[in-house]
Image 1 (cartoon, rainbow, N blue to C red):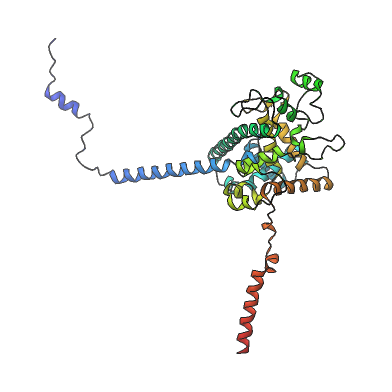
Image 2 (image 1 turned 90 degrees about the vertical axis):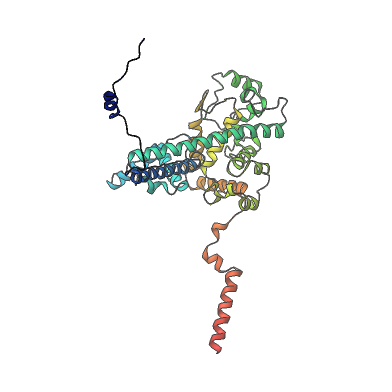
Amino acid sequence: MSQVRVPVSSQTSLGQFLPPQRQGPSAASPALEEELEQMRQEKGTKQRKTTYYIAQGRAIRRTTVLYTSLDDLIAENDGRYEEARAGELAQATTEQDRLQRGYLALTSTLPWLHPKLATLDVEDCEDMLRKLKKGADAARGDDTSTLKDLIAAWVNEDFQPSTLLRSDSKQLRGFTHDICGKLLCPAEWDWNNDRVKAGIRDRTSDHIVSENSWPLFVYENYSFSSGNLEKGLFKSKILVQAFKAIFTSPSSAREVEGDGDGADILENNRRARRALNHFKVTPRSLAYVVCQVRFALSSVSSWRTIDGDFDYEAFWNNTVDFFEDVPGPVARSRVAKLLEWWTRKVFGKNHREDLTPEVVSKMSVSALAEQRKMLEDAAFDSE
């Protein structure tokens, strides 16, 4: 085949449609460089915001809500605000009150969030909430993984079962395992009764395990009194161990006996210092731990809301409502004492928030400063 020769004139014509070879810096380069630099800065700012929101979101499941979406909390607060402005604040349901308290807990955990919401458009707000949720879910997953290992070690050490739990597997947990089954068993039933044990394992209609029963693991010494259902509730060793492991450090979970002085935890553990506002255990942080322990004892391998007849979201609600939706001042006083007990067990006997200016003024450092000032004044007057 003969080669087709393109005329020189055609080559020149075609060459006119090709981009010219750059011989030197273009006159537009400074503007282009400025635009590129601005894009790099915007990208860096966006990455920093993403990292910040994800990091901030890690506290949400632990201290605010385990299942409810942030959108629902914001919507409830906005709805109440509009009703109040219109002078038509309606009677709220238990669920609505729980949502509103959740929003208040959220803004206590993330104080910057409420004013921030007023500055964002819809798209930016949705983007921020997605990143907060990503951080929240990641922290919940990390805690689930941590307790999967630790619960196995604690059960093996404290109960020495004939079949030891494996830290890397949940197949032998749940009601098939005698110790896990005992701890998960509704407190009103006797796990040592063979009929009860068989009924639970066979999931008979007479032995439905649901969120409507407190499991034995939430009771102190894993002992239940039918005459006083509140006695020892939420004071079990395994709950204290789990709370410490999540909110202070896994190593601190080894020390749960006594009321604890806690000074070393607060002074030496940065994670503990920032874990909770003012170093106080809250109803929602405790409810989070209760659900995490229940899941760790179960045989379910992946996090879910429903486990057979057991609804984790409703269980979390029941736990929160025990503390927040009390029938009156007597119950409120008992709840307050229980939370004080928890704060002392986890963070120790720390009373820095009680050091008001009036109290500090009567202490020796302030008293000495006042005396020195008085001596100076006296010397000046004598001259």
